[in-house]
Image (cartoon, rainbow over all chains, first blue to last red; front, side, top):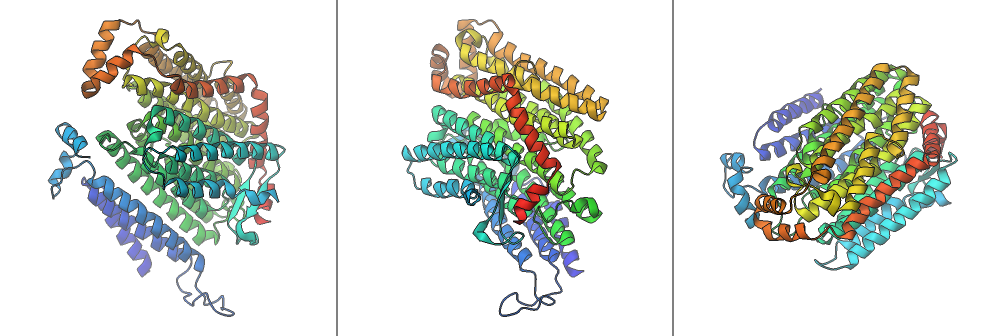
Length: 119
Length: 509
């Protein structure tokens, strides 16, 4: 139940952030969303069996399912790589000023020339 | 024995991607490696088609583990055909990219090789989680290709297109992953063969798999989630647009065909959803093209409309329907890439794809005009090109299944497609040309690159830019005249989807 609630909270936070205007918040929203899905994958293997799936003669009744854990590991790596790329996209083509106000101006015409010159 | 070579379709391009990544800026050898690997890939795919053409299914579990535990790679007629056509497109588009200069930018070769590895893997895998991984392997280099530009020449437009593309695809992948989790939770496996028919027996598995299908349909740009494609594709270089048009959405379509055939076993209860969604995709895609002003954005909207036609095959799920759908898919990949390449050649040379700023190219560029004309008529579905056969078989299959409304939509959309192709033809190729006025207009529109544009208007497009589009246009003509050949292969592929027992057996071996 705690796992289900955690997933729900993460998804709610993700939806809120993804719908924001600032691109960096959208990226953070996707970080939350991928965590939520990783927990979902994790719970798909059943969370009541927690014994280590190693050693001689593991008991299937108490041994944890290793497959979803491997899935989660792979998914984390992929999500991490794309998040980095998204952050790069978030800072490319916007002025080097802090704060959200700059984000709105990033795509406007007058910035285009010096943006292209800068890169 | 030959089964053991199937994973090479993924391994070789991936390793070579790593090797070519060491290439310095301006070196030629990465491009030589790229073209060699792509040619070998094409050859291997053709051999695979020859091997599977009688319905044989080749399966291999990596590392020799028994079925159900191993990472499965399976090739049947459908995946072999897809491999052959994607290989052809990658080869031709890379050729165009190298001719246009996009290919000479650093990291082009490794990105395309990694993309090839991902596409091949996604077409050959028989496991949901591996499908997710291979789609990611395919997408990550695409993100790079989308913003690929020389230092200092990147545009804000491609960054904004890329932002949209990456965010959308990340969202879709996350939804797909959630679907995989739900399938594992409900069925206890993500192996396609073990899941065969599972969705028909258990509504829970059906709901879980539907999440995956939903994600794949978004990736294939079905209405109402089509907006990303029309905005992201025209934002990059013409060569990359052509490459993406042939690979990305088509891999998703392939996966939809495969998943619905194997996991749902062609369940008739859910087919109506497909009929509604795909009819809407056909109609809304073509109407979207009406308001567009550049060649590539018009073509991008047409692609959405054509995706509706292709997926109609799986929504009918009869033998005739699947055969027509697969034929349509293969034909469409070739024709669309041809159109993007011929308009791309114009855009690369004259610096714009805007309809208002180009005119009268028919006398100046007769070869481009001819290849555009052939591909456009083929897209609209006129004889003697492959588009006619594709549309005819699809409409006949729909009539046979008794969906007259869908037939009406399909025919009406064809007509609008033709009108829209005529719009490009009239504006870019046929309109009378006034030399001085044209150069003035071009100069006014081009801004900083004026000098280049004026010289461009005086010389013709280079042959190396014209040939790739022409080659694909000739392929569609050949497929139209010799349609029996490809129809036979498509029907073998369709039979493999209708009766999945040999596929399941090959995976579990």
